[in-house]
Image (cartoon, rainbow, N blue to C red):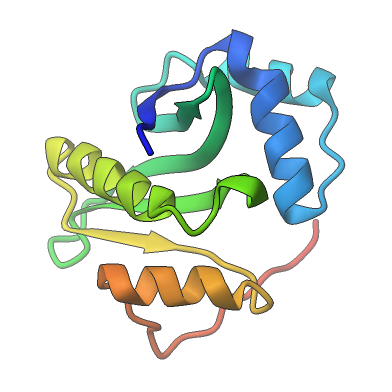
Amino acid sequence: MKVNFRKATEEDLEAVISLCNECFFEETSMEYARKIFNETKDDPNDIYLVGEADGKIIAHAKITIIKTIYENMNIYAILNHVCVKPDYRRHNIATKMLEEIQKICKEYNCKAMELWSNNVRVPAHACYKKFGFHLDDAGFFSKKI
């Protein structure tokens, strides 16, 4: 299946939010999405990637480039909201998207790519492992503020 990957535009937001709401059972409003997108759209380290096929957005990932002053960490990327529309899964679209993400990360001289994924996303984890990601010996800590 031919998928075109590109940076998201404001015109893509409704489709992106709809896809993420579907894949992650979220309830993000368009008002909130538009506000944050417009605040960050000119930041080269905040990248919203979309995959388009059949004239619609069928895949998405958020890439955040982190530049550090620490030599071992150097520059790395955090990926989140990596998803493919359920009707389009099992066509290697996620793998193609990860290849595109890796290409972008290399352009930014990233030393590593890291991603967050909920424990219930077992099929996604299999895809990540097949692509070469490994589960670090660490926990994801969170605190609401």
